[in-house]
Image (cartoon, rainbow, N blue to C red; front, top):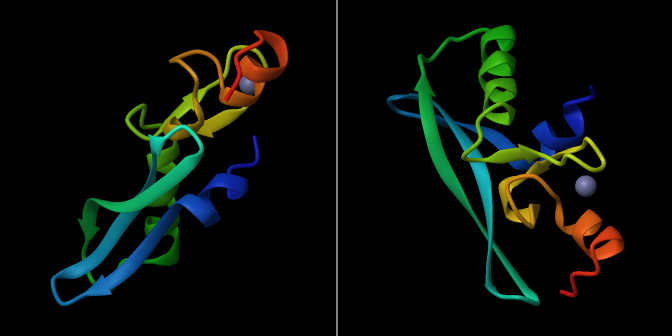
Length: 101
Ligand SMILES: [Zn+2]
């Protein structure tokens, strides 16, 4: 599976005095038609971590059910905020289950 589709837009690493802060974008819907997102700090890596270590930490976020879910209908991994339920993403819910957003 190509994880870059999600890693680039939904995870980031910020250099801070205490290390490299790994953050994940969390999407929420204060109103059904209005999307809001914020960055949540997940962990801090030591300054001087290698690109491989940083990449591994970002990929690990995709496996975290607090942030991403896998749709049982299209088999795509989606940000948690785009899941209609634990098992079905919003686009499948809309296209196949008749849910209206
Ligand atoms: Zn889906």
